[in-house]
Amino acid sequence: MSVRRLAAEQPDGFQFNPENRKWADAQLKKYPAGREQSAVLPLLWRAQEQCDGWLPEPAIRHVAEFLNMPYIRVYEVATFYTMFNLEPVGKYLVQVCKTTPCWLRGSDELERVCFEEIGSPESISSDGNFTWRQVECLGACVNAPIVQINADFHEDLNSQSFRALLSKLRAGETVTAGSHVGRHASEPVEIEKSANANEKSANEEQETLQFKKPE
Image (tube, rainbow, N blue to C red; front, side, top):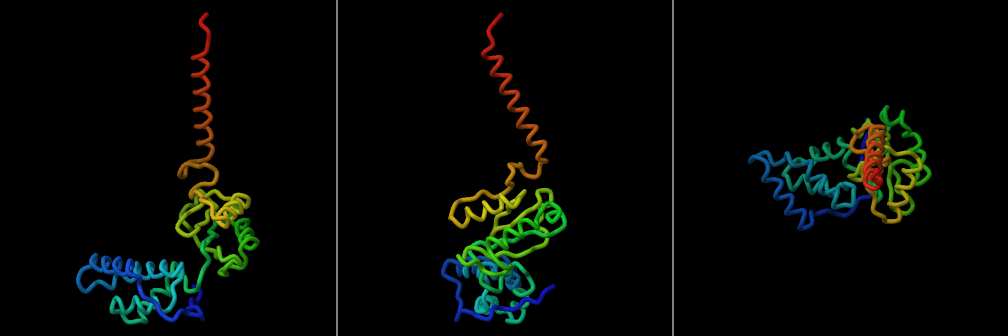
């Protein structure tokens, strides 16, 4: 595992905003008395969301004080889990799966698009829109290759469809998560095509029967 350190430049301070403070208070009520520190993961996650996708040191310290935990324990959690970004990221965090199924299905091409469209891994693109990184197994091997962008999963990508996806996001357009070849869930594409063909054939046959002249 690589060493994870806090960013060199940090904001002066952090406090949960009123909405998130109310939310955090409600989270503590989910746990038995004396076990409220179990809320450390969701509270760190909400702090990261409030900070536009990254977790600064003052936010880690604030969560420690909020939960009455030793700072070092919360620091250990934040630096252990890669779901917490310890440096600023772009508006869209692009995570490219490089596990074997995605690699065999063309994730190298997606990685090449990232270098061309975004830049080096972990850096923020010049327009501030993107940061990208390699990850291991996003859990949709049957629809490989797959990319996670913020909370959405985009499946069955190739270099053309992935580049088009990034262009739409850069332009502020709405994009649809899921398969980019029209696959339903994880059904084989051939079965879906066959089903569509059968449906079309049935419709055409029905139209023929409707308009056939009586003998």
